Image (cartoon, rainbow, N blue to C red; front, side):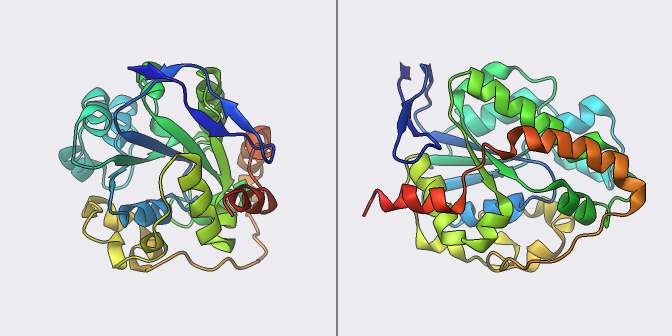
Length: 274
């Protein structure tokens, strides 16, 4: 069925009525990001909720099948992942798994060759990280990259799509989650109409029993985490060979960066409840 949904606008103290959009009987929350943007830790956090089932990059198999990209461990991944993107979305969006919230960790690059009508059946927020930090982290694992591998263009395009559909998606800097994890999670929860749970702040190594272990080899250090690592200010030096990639990614990043909620705005938003 269809109805109107109230969402918080980034102008403090304002509510915005979204356009009429398709509404599921459950909350299906898409967390869009590029790689190396705290998306796995945030998924681990939501996996601790009593009412939530998490889905880790559900369209990744579809992406590999469609693009033929030769990712590490591709042969094994093609055996264990669902390669039909539509089937994956039916499972994530339309199938009842006995939970009120379905949390989908998405890499923006993986939304390719899929019907955008699915976007109307889900809610959306965006995790953003500065390109220098993403490139520095990503190239430790994959040194041979092109700008598209980092998904900044796709993040911006997806943001524009969901806004055009009538959503007012939250954009949040991943570094701010590390600076203020509880505040950030409270804002995400309030924005999408669910109660914050204290359990979201810590987890077992590997994310706990609600996380599918198939991607554990990819998680790097986060697989051994038990909570959000504290933010540390440090200089990031990107090797000169990535200058052109850095420039292109920065241009796309800057198109959406001013949409991100600030820590002061988050405090103002939460203060409305007190």
